[in-house]
Length: 154
Image (cartoon, rainbow, N blue to C red; front, side, top):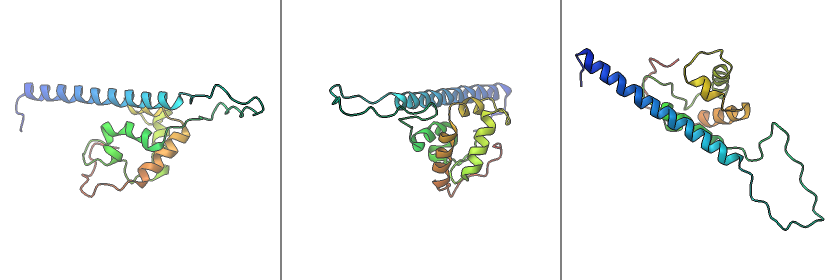
């Protein structure tokens, strides 16, 4: 379909903007829900024997219930495709990306060295360990054979 009037283009831009906003909202909500579920402590038996010593509590940087990288990676699917396998020209495919590149890019977003309207917020939700795991997950995914070269993605 070819749009020729400025009204048609404006309507298309508005529809695409709302679609992107909904996708971003769903991604953020999913990411927060997964992290909340993972941080819920497991049920503790009420009748533990008194002779059993209590296990050492994890340190402040240790998560006793880490989210699997494959689950965290699904928060990227709304824009970058399922398993990072995207065949579109606006978002960079993540499938097959080297771990170091993924981690460096996400760290740059998180620390504000790489400007973005959305990715800085997303990246701040993940720890260094999360980024390493997600990077390994995406590196193991085969890129789509028919993927379109990214024109708008950087």
